[in-house]
Length: 439
Ligand SMILES: [Zn+2]
Image 1: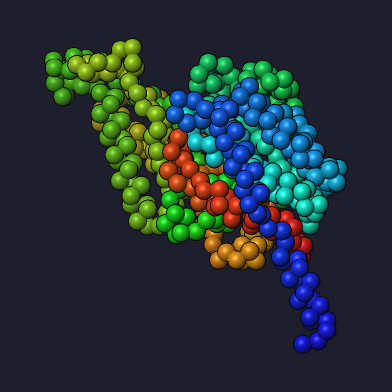
Image 2: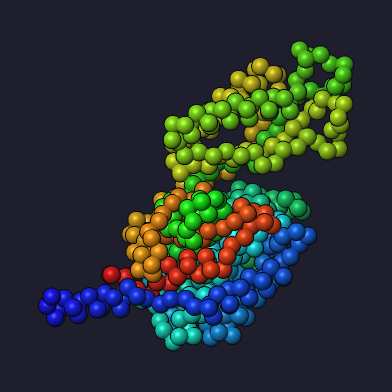
């Protein structure tokens, strides 16, 4: 082995070693999680509504904590917060690490927040150690990502990348019926540039976007792994409220052949779609479907009455845009067939569409190399859930994601995550942004 080779190897080692997290970082993460859970507690879980004063309170809390550690904190046009080391405050291009602080109603504490806290841990760890990153890093804590409040998802990243539609701005809040635009105005946000499709965050300055998120599914638990690198994000087609309209009647007096029962027609529709879905899965198609909200009119329904109407939500997700398109056509065909059969009419709302996203291959291989460098076996998987990273990726920013093992599902109070797992996943990010990009 020549001297040069030895020198090369030692540089490679020094670079690939990067920084590692320790118990102090884990304690910091635990404290932030429990303080934020306390501030956003509801009856069973946590509720941090999208575009609310509660969200602002959490962002203010994170701002205070970060400033106390000597980080620079700024607010963007949506009053998201951006954190960085003082020496990186003006530097471009930068690596953006981010996720969201809102939650679904009565949700868990980790969906979104884990990614924000992971980013902050990287910054605070480097700040305390007096070290810099291999390239400038900023961390963004975003507002409204969850679709549960208004219907549209990824709202902050859509507005930041100038891709939010007027229809999304007019989407109404599930609680008070006021529009997303009005809720944004309440927070002092100027809607005009969002309507104009202005990039609120200059994308040319962002070298890459990284997001850590809880898996929200069972795979990492089954594989006994704390973390994974994500390959791509499923897109979706959503119908917020489908209306099945039939004919009311007495449950005892109307014989079967005279009935136009919207509940039975919807049951037929969903059963048919379910069996078509099963066939697709057998063929290896990436597809999931869900009808998460369903109700007859509470003012009029009764056990002894054929309801005149049923409303339900319908959502399909896939990594393949063609599958989404094909299944939308199948849905329409089946609706026509079952309408003809039952005399029940289905009124469909304008669909909400979110395209699937491919995560950047170079970023992926860098994250996998970091996994290996810190002693974890390389492991990657696709994301079933949607994430802000999809919007950055589809806006041309190279994007990468790291998943953390989570238990108890997600979007519910049983959602849980071990802080050790978060540290294992955050270490991948930290290694990635502290190693020389060329190694
Ligand atoms: Zn999330």
